[in-house]
Amino acid sequence: MKSSMLLNIAAGAAAAVLMAFAVHPALADGPEVVSGPAADPACYVPWAADTKFFKYPAKTGPFRIALANGYIANTWRIQMIQTAKAYAAQPDVAAKLKEFKVVSTGEDVPAQISAINNFIDSGFDAIVVNAQNPSAFGPVIDRAKEAGVILVAFDNILDTEDAINVDVDQKGLGVLWANWLINHIPNGGKILEVRGVAGTSVDTDRHAGIHEVLDASGKKWDVVEVVGKWDDGTAQKATADAIAVNGKFDGFTVQGGDTGTVQAMIDAKHPFVPFAGETENGFRKFCAKYAGDGLKCTSAGTGPAQVAVAIKTAIDALEGKVVPQSVKLPLAVVSDPDFKDGESFYSDQSDNFFVGNSFPTCGINFDAREIMSQDKTDK
Image (cartoon, rainbow, N blue to C red):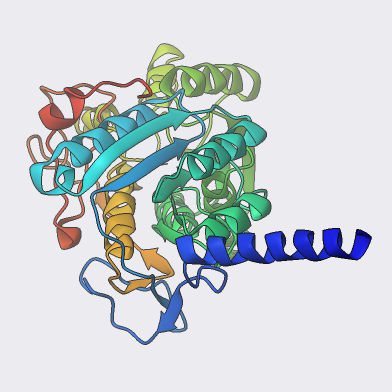
C-alpha cells in the first residue's frame, strides 16, 4: 500500500511537470541565443559588441502586457506613465494588445516585486519594469523565466542577463555633465550635485560618471551632495537649504528637478553659474532666458519615451523577433547657445514637460498634447 501510494505521488508529480512544459514549452532554458542583427537594427542597437541576441518562442497575440513602475512622485515618472498609455493607445499598437495594465508601488522594493509576481500569476505575457533596485529582483526574474513571461527593464534596469534591458548610457550622461563643468569652470571650484532617488541604478550610474571625471581632472573640486529625487519641489528645497548653509557655488549639476533648482537660485539671489542638467522644458526656458546673465547650460538626458521602446521591445520579443538582451538608446542633448523656442523648448507648454521625448529611430514620436491628455493614475 505504501509503495503504491509513493508511485501514485511520483506519477502525479511527473504529470504536473509534463503539463507545465506543455503549457510553456522549452521555457526552462529561456530564449534561444542567436546571432544578430536585431529585427529592427536602427532601433535595437546592442549595448556592446558582445551583447547577446535573444529569440523567444513566438506567441499569437493580442497580448497582455503590464507596466510595473516603482517611484512615481516626480514629473518624469508621471509623464512616463502618460507616455506608456499614449503609446498603447496608438492604433497599430492597440491592435496587438488584449490588455495593458499599469501599477506604481513607490520606493518599496518588496511591493514592486510583489506586483511583478501578481502579474506573473495573472498570466500576463510580458512585464516592463522601471526597477527600484538593480539587484534585488533575482527570484522574481527566475519566476518570470520559468513561467514564460518576458521581462523588459528600462531606465532603472536589472542586473541580469535573464531579462531584456533598455536604457541610455546613464554613466555616460554623468560624464557629459562633468566634462561640461570642467570646460566652463577651468580652475575647479565648489559644485552642488542634486541627486535622484537613492538606490536606483540611474542615480548610482550618473553619480559615478560625474565623480570619475571630476576626480581625474586634476582640478580641485568641493562637491556638496543633496537629494532632489528628480522632483522640482524637492530639488528646490534641497537647493535652497544648500545655498543657505554653504553660500555661493561655482556650478551646479542636477539629475532632475532642474527647474526647481534654478528657481531656488533666483529666490536666494544666487549668481547664475554654469549648470549641467536634465531635459525639463522649464529648465530649458530658464537657460534661454538667462543665458546672457551667466546661466550657461547643457541640458541632456532621456525622455520618458523609453517606456514606449520597452513596450515595443516586449511586443517584438513575444512575436518571436530577434532583439538584443541589452538595448542602448541615444541621449538627447542641447547646450548653450542652442536653446531655441519651438525646437529645443516650448514656451507655451508646461514647465514640467520633458523635452526630447521621442526615439525617431524606433518610430516613436510624441507631442505634448498626445501625452498630457492621458490619465496619470494606475489602471
